[in-house]
Amino acid sequence: MPRADWNIVKEAEINLPPLPEQRLIAEALSDTDALLAALEKLIAKKRAIKQGAMQELLTGKRRLPGFEGEWVEKPLSEIMRIRKERINPFNYISTRCIELEHIEPISGYLLGWVDSRNQRSLKTLFHSDDVLFCKLRPYLRKFYFSTFSGVCSTEFWVFTSINDTVANQFIYHLVQMYKFLEIANSTTGTKMPRADWTLMKDTVFALPSNVAEQTAIASILSDMDAEIDALTAKRNKLRDIKQGMMSELLTGRIRLVGREDTLPLSTRPAT
Image 1 (cartoon, rainbow, N blue to C red):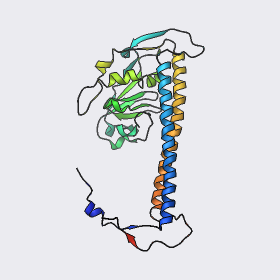
Image 2 (cartoon, rainbow, N blue to C red):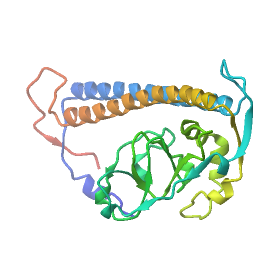
Image 3 (tube, one colour):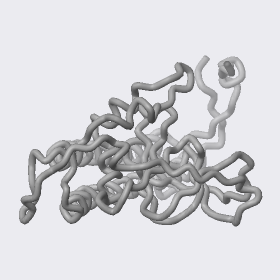
Image 4 (spheres, rainbow, N blue to C red):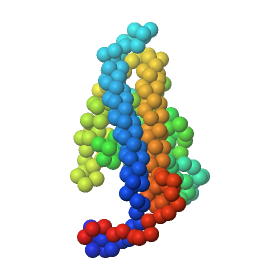
């Protein structure tokens, strides 16, 4: 376990601006922190609203106007199937590869990908409109609705509808339900817990018999996701701005007072 050594750290020399400028810098960075905190609070509120909407819309407790067909109950194995096409990326065409770290927990936000040709382990093929769900440590709640075809870590389940009576968009929101996550967390293994499909596939879920209603529900929830994604992108951009501010303001590259002089002496932390 590497640890910082204060006896080494305390000898580091740090250039400081005059005290009034220190206060201005701290105030500017604190204002940015306050904006970030407000965005985080708003994102959490929007996510809570979406969770509430999911529990109402995905269970039939609240019906959308214009839909009156009955809902049916089916086990997961009759709603979706797991794709099992595996490839060796070294012998496959170059394509986007999604690893575990590329999906943000809870939000389903895709953070990036890598070139599959740079990977060596076996990967799972997925197609546009498939649903990726991370079976490793399912409590992290990593899921993604694919907008392109590619490959991914074998630690993802790649879900697709069992037939044309189920919309993949509906499945994407179904895997985010508390009920699904609860059974997914009935895991095997301790150090590396994984969800077990054999323990999940017979669990019954309700869904509209009308695919159009499934799609309409998914569309409403996806609109909520888009709003959350926009706020998330804004938050991430503000984080980058703050990092840039710190790099510039805490090194003296940008000054907050109209003076050209810098503090000539280096200051050490008090011992």
